Length: 209
Image (cartoon, rainbow, N blue to C red; front, side, top):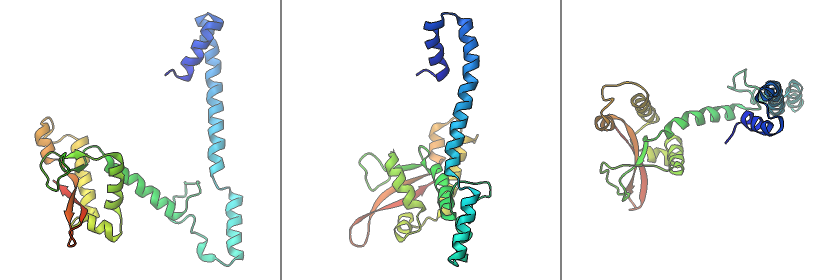
């Protein structure tokens, strides 16, 4: 696939048939295109932002309705530099989502071997993207189902395992260069199936380190 500059230059070859003329016209076209794209992007981003007039109108409406407790609801815990229409809950969810992306690193979330057995056999499989989404949602959740899924592990344990995994992936360490030893020492999370008191299967996570 050609870039915009390459596409235009190729199109001009058939018309101008002079490399120097093409270079000259491209030097004029490129800054004009950049200005157009920046203006277009600026207009779009500004359309997402709440204007000062709209913010004051919202405060006025809340004041008339005597809903003083909601004055700071839309900006609670949101950085002052953030001008997008985020309320506190949306901002916290956004931060949580960005942190959860780290758990999707290849090799960190796994299943037992190919038969999907309930026994860890040393031949773990990488989860699919959809399975990782479900696992991360369960693992980081605060419901009773999430607590049962984490079993004896806490959210702090999962974060520490992730930090150690990233350390093995991104920094030098004693086992670097020996993939067998590195895989043996590198922590990861595996999801296994266990039976509850009713004999029904339920997913349980385990940290292997």
